[in-house]
Length: 123
Image: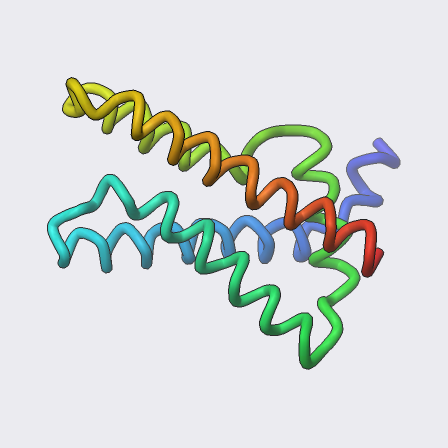
């Protein structure tokens, strides 16, 4: 029971809300441009860019960093939207699947590499 009481629920809710809001906003914007399948990837990249810009001028809140570390360690939740969007796109791609898989690998490995660099440098 002590484990549950020691969890920073506000930080968890805020971090998850941040991820979901960026994802939904990106899906909405990409739907306007008739490419809703790119919303998941756009949301992840835009969140990463905003956090990098924020980190350039201010320190990221410790609660956000701590919660994000737990999410990244315990699950692939941050990359789940990319996987879901990828599966939806594979159905409609046909001959373009190899190119799409290259983009998918790059778009997954690049954020992981940047995250590792940030974690190594600033944590």
